[in-house]
Image 1 (cartoon, rainbow, N blue to C red):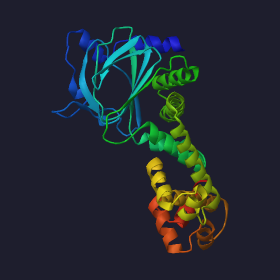
Image 2 (image 1 turned 45 degrees about the vertical axis):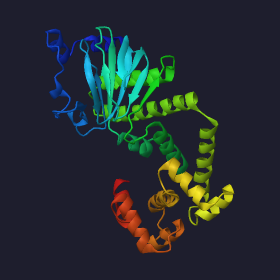
Image 3 (image 1 turned 90 degrees about the horizontal axis):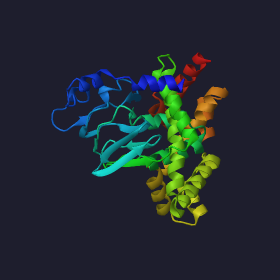
Image 4 (image 1 turned 135 degrees about the horizontal axis):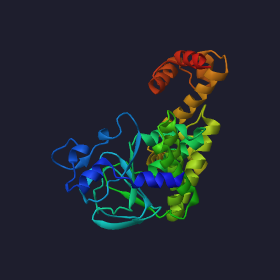
Length: 326
């Protein structure tokens, strides 16, 4: 099976055949509609998808550029030379490089035996990971924190290098991704999303092992305690009670939660209450008044308003939709 993939990847694409015929300039129209800065646009590849996988074109240098998406380079065979933010980088077989959408890089021409796979990933995909690959409030919030730690979505150009050629787990996931890339089945796109989610989790674990510090360990411990407190006290959770638990003032606790999660304490409590609400709507026949009180809302109108803001419909309409899908 994998031999078949290698044989397929070794074949020249139309773009590569054009280069071999003597066209030694990048056809920018393939990558961008912009006429000034060379910014590769996700709309050229993603359409309505969150992820697209393609082989990097060989035989030609690629000029300095950036992109409006997260890019991942994976060396399937051979090696890959590039300059990222003016820093020379050589990727060897099995290694991975992640680049955010604000960094520039330029690429040296690949030889015939250099097979590089590019993953074009919309930033919204990381919301998809948190929503679909975590279960329960604590897992959801901790995964969100880890993803935010890994990908700093500000205006700063950043990249992450992963020398993971000896990681059997990561290489196995990569091989599965390539199999699905070649697969045209209706489920292939869904499989790619979940495999990529698993890959990101593995890379998060790799990065944590490489860069773990006492400060980061303390941050993780702090957040675990915060999330556990909310899990157990969401009906009447309040910052003063939480601050007392840490022997700190309210301002310190509030500021650190915001710094680490990019959410306010109130937002986290509300997220937990709404998750419980969904379970009560699905598995009980409680009235809306009773559900609102059960999750900690005395004002039913306010309860309706925040639920609709989150899910786009009232709790009653949401329950009806759930009943239709059973």
